[in-house]
Image 1 (cartoon, rainbow, N blue to C red):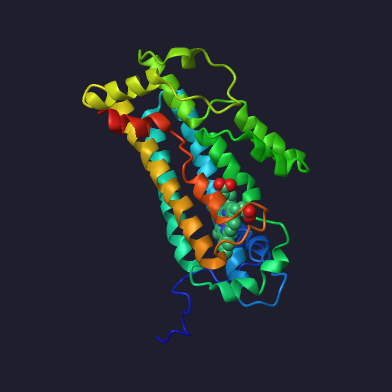
Image 2: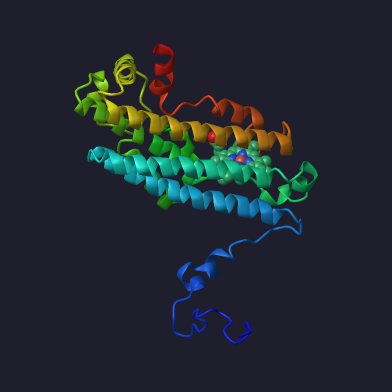
Length: 277
Ligand code: HEM
């Protein structure tokens, strides 16, 4: 029998009136959403790199939100699985920089002017991830004021406890003294670091066998932040490689702003506890 006798090896080949792969994935929408504004060859790479990052961020948000609920309900095993996935998503995003790094400054300058003042700085999904994790940097709401639906979605996140807040509430439920943190009801502001929380984590790390679930949760959080830090580091290095010390299209000082962001800590006591052990 030749290949032309049975071309699809029994596969469905007729899709009139049936849902196909492209229908299910709405590829008509996804694959027509790339509209370069210049004729530069590399603009398509730039657009796809950002769009795919946003898609992965969408999944990360979905996972972090569910992990928050799972921790709240003391369902730690499912939360661990979701947090592992979030770390893997960031690992994936970290590898993606290798593709973008193939673009030289000469190539980027050919279409940078087309971007106007748009910049990843205005990525509301990135802010959603920061807010969900616990970095509630409220001035970052400002660029979205012209979009009430974006503000509403971000405010909804800010109204509830973050991932780290839920971890701390779990510490309290398990009998640890976390100080004033235990009575918090306003979640909008970034919390301040506390000695009691540091001491609670210290106790957990000093006796992993006894507090295995909390110990594992702490390590999952550190894992997530570790990969997130690497994303920031890869970003700033790629940015320096491509635009040097020029200002960003979003208006910040560029590389020096991004270097400052490397200092942001999502789960501060979990990093400090390493020194305390
Ligand atoms: C040629 C590639 C890139 C360049 C030159 C670049 C440059 C910059 C610069 C200079 C900033 C600081 C804000 C500003 O003034 O514009 C920034 C912020 C940001 N970029 Fe990029 N970027 C690139 C690729 C990407 C990609 C692929 C993503 C993925 C979504 C991304 C996401 C972000 C985010 C989320 C911020 C905000 C960071 C923060 O505020 O901590 N960037 N970028």
